[in-house]
Length: 298
Image (cartoon, rainbow, N blue to C red; front, side, top):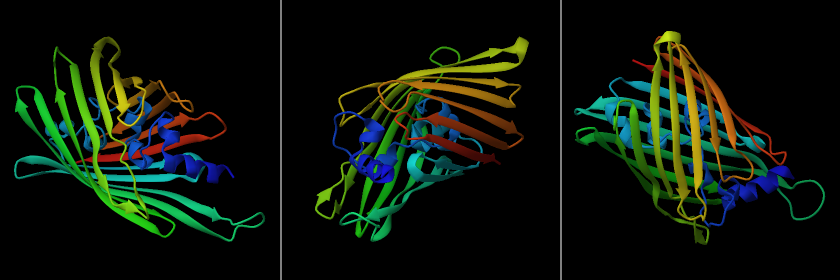
């Protein structure tokens, strides 16, 4: 029963937004990279790696190494989300290719009381290509192009969307500001209606402070987020404590959601490998989300 209720909510996009609005494809609202998710899932200035494709493609501009990153999320009510990204240089520009696959398994089909007659899976997917480049001094611009696919029972639809972002680095030393607009596009009809994309506006800043006496870097971030089809604004706060560039502890808090607010996580950086974990608890007996990420730079 919980799963049936949850599927209804996610298709209506009320669980992720929980405010007035009529967008769908809530999987596009899920985060990428346990580090970003643990720090409140804003990412507009702090996702300075291939995970930037999900937050602000302008951050890709300074990607100097090739990277590959994989994130697996065990979301609430058996929802599973996998995200893979590969970053590289081509024609003197940085590019990141990404693919996201999100599944909700074993939805029961019932026409009356008793045993379920059958089950089916809900599947969402997007593939993307992103790039970024400098446009003036410390001001960078980035773009993402997405192909989106959704499958629900016997109904299927596809569509296209784009993201655009700006980031201004070192407004003062170690202070960055960024803005991104995500999921601007259109879908085919899913049976009789088009699913409206969850257009997403984010504005944020981050500041990094080095404490050499204890060999620790601390990142502070804050920002605002608004889904354009909803009435509210979410405020994000996050921090990261990175000790000896080896062990990281992260905290995040976000306002405006009925079912969630804080998140925590940790990371281990070893040579060219990053291992990150994030935990997000939900209220109303919905359970918790666990996210694991692996990244390799070469």
